Length: 212
Image (tube, rainbow, N blue to C red; front, side, top):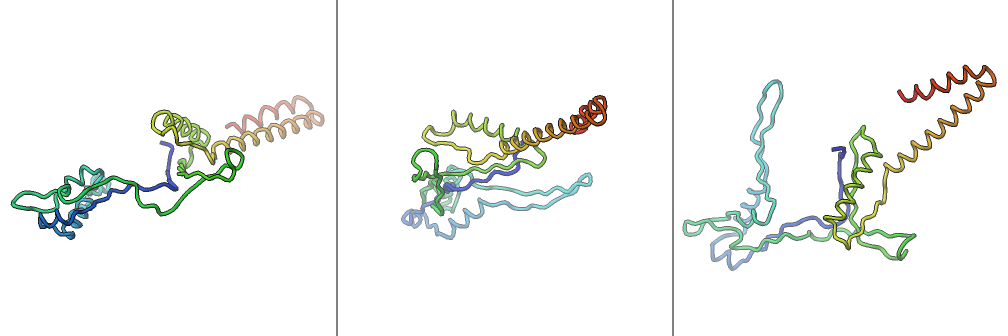
């Protein structure tokens, strides 16, 4: 992949909410502390150590992060009458958007209603160092157009607000035009002063040296 980093600005983070039912907790004799301890213990990564092999150090870790409501519902939070008590028996687990902490919007001065602003989520994508910005931008746009047809809802409008690949292409085009004008000027000057043979040599040598 030619992508080094992806950042999301705006929108609401995913949040899995556990709503405990006190009456059920009393029935199973489960405390809030036990539920909290079970959740913390299950959603953690532990460093188990490291070892060396062939002059290379390897780090060993165990990860047991909770990723879905099914995993959380199946979490054992205690024991009642010699049988496990699952979290789903004393709580309601919901996969919801997180609480709103900030609002992001976008407006269009030249289109639609200039005074109207729309809720927005900005996806900023950075390329890897040394990759072609024009090619990376083109690939991202093509992939996004595909997602518009298959994943993104029809009532969600996608807008490219900044494309450094496009500006890079414009700068390269302007540089090539300036270079061509400079070479033509030098060739014409040499043709009048030294002759067409010398001017032709320069006209061939300069572009070849820049292309290497």
